[in-house]
Structures are given as C-alpha cells and as structure tokens.
Amino acid sequence: MKKFENKKVSKLKKLTRAFSVEQKAQSGAVFRLMVDGIVGFAILLIVISTMAYFQGLRIQASNEKFFSLVKSATDTPTGKVIVEKNLLFTPSGFSTISIRDKTNVFEGCFRFQSNQASAVISDDGDKIDFTTTVETDVYARCTLTGDGCNFNDEDCCEFDCVISFGKKLVDE
Image (cartoon, rainbow, N blue to C red; front, side, top):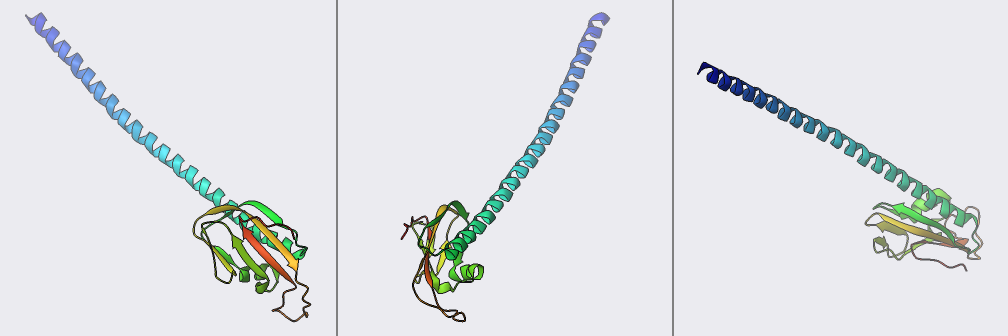
C-alpha cells in the first residue's frame, strides 16, 4: 500500500512540476508578446515619421519648382508655354503678391487658371487657394503686351502672364 501511495505522490509531484513549468512558459509568452508589440509599434512610428519627412521634402521641392517655372516664364515672355509636371501642393495657396516678391514683376501682370476641383481662384484671378493636397501639372505662359514702361513705373506690365494649375495652355 505504501508503494501505491508513493506512486500517487510521485505522480502528483510530477503533475505539479509540469503545471508550474507550463505556467512559467505561459507568462514568458505573454511577456514576449508584449515586447514584440512594443518593437512593432516603434517600427511603425519610424516608418510613418519617415514618410512624413519625405512628403515635406517633396512639397518644398514642388514650391521651389513652381517659383522657378514662373521666373523662367517672366524671363522669356515669348508666349511659349513652360510646364512642370507632378507638383504637389498642400491646402494653402499662392497670390500674385508672393509671385511679385520672387520675380520683381508687378503683381497685376499675373493671373491664375485651374481646372482642379480643389482649387479656388479669387474673383479677380490674383489668388489661388487649394482646399486639399493636390498633385498637378503647372503651366505658365508670358506674352509681351507692347506697353512701354518707364523704369520707375512699378504698376506697368510689359507682359501678361497666365499660370495654370492642371488646365493645359497652348503657345501663342
């Protein structure tokens, strides 16, 4: 009988040890899962911040290309259309005054056009605002008006410039 009880006790000890080992394994798995979750979250944050950084660089480069396009058009007012493809603009806008500041040309010489649904042009055509982020082609064309301007006459336009967002312009 004692032998039978010893077998029972030894089986019980084995089961207790197995149960204890199993509990430790389960708690280790939970800890491992928590660590994996934290590492995954950190990687996700790095990827998202990297994408935002490069998106910001792309927007900055698009603004620089836009002003370079306008400057090229004002430097050669021959009526030839100059194009920049796939520029990215955020919900903000441009005015003829901001273009004047970059080109030193009277703001009355510029007007905007667009066929973009998210582009709102002011009634007099001197300001364009984007309501959403837009990727579009930009066209610029400057033509001589034939008006002779004095050197000190800041309100005179020797040429007329059209800047179009998405709406294709043709050479004159």
